[in-house]
Amino acid sequence: MAKSTKKTDKELSYAELVNQLTEQKKKYMDLRFQMIISHVDNPMQKRTMRREIARLNTFIRQKELAGENK
Image (cartoon, rainbow, N blue to C red):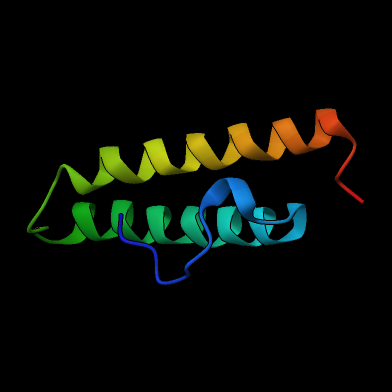
């Protein structure tokens, strides 16, 4: 997915990653609900969003192990 910010996911702080993860999870739930109710133009978007959430979880875990989660 296209990022509106210039920072890459690796350069974000722990708090920014957590905020972005929360936002992505909300968008994913909205997409799931939309798929149940009506037609979605791009059903592959669901897979892309799941992978984005997994990537953010990976970066968050790396920051936690490095002790940057404060």
